[in-house]
Length: 390
Image (cartoon, rainbow, N blue to C red; front, side):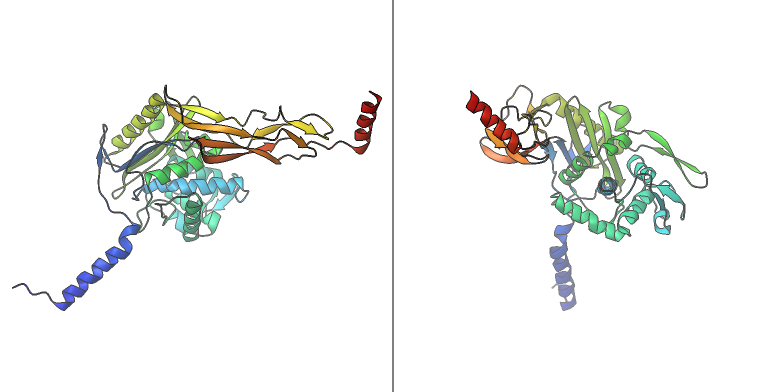
């Protein structure tokens, strides 16, 4: 008869308790989808303008994403530059910690001085871990504090299956994301024109203070094999497999593809291209709201010095539909027939309601784009006098 000791029972119970408490934080599914190109754990295709998901496979499961993690590091750097917390030409001294990073790197010299723009290029082009950590330290003081900022930004963006543990994507306990969350981060990155200026660079030299040169080669080989691709972020480790988030533009349509956990580098690039080509061949983008159009021409101005009102939507809005089909999404303009001066740039005077089968899915502000002065009392009296004379 099999005898089980009390110690064995306690050990088993302890292990099961740990699995129950912590298992949900780091999904462990190894399910691989067999595609035309090879095996991948997850994939997704998203339209940039609308955020519509056009294709997905296992896209919400959390899993290691290797250096694709750096998309958040890149985003926070771009936002720091936009918010004047960093300057592109600002010089940063490399710490021992940053210079000592392993894996992909540009071999920073501890104590060496480097420009922010060059460090950002290194993170984007050749996925440099040392440059990424130095950027993290320059923004938050330490990589640990920067990780807190990464996770805070993830919550703000609505990422529900993501947790960051470092700025690089090097293997770490409790670090994971999902294909859908990755696409959402890339969508935010693409709002910054500087990113696409740098992401399409194929090869460039990285200069060190003492004259040494490190040649950077873009890890996103799709740039050379697919003409429409102009950006992306690769990643690969033993636990994450081969990963790629890529973006491409064809006419007025930009797409974002994500492939995670591919069985080879060849598979991640081929599957990414297949997804992008499928998107461009199958769908078309239709602009419902054009922020360049003046919407105020039919609004009557009252008590205004000049009869000139410039009114525009706060942002564009597009939908993606299968070619030859119509969309269930429509836009409804809600503006007053008349409005009184004075008005200032940025004043909200109406909205555009975006409806899906009559259900409100988004509301876009309509804003005044020019100052409109009120008519003076003297001018009002003159106008009244003219009417009396008639």
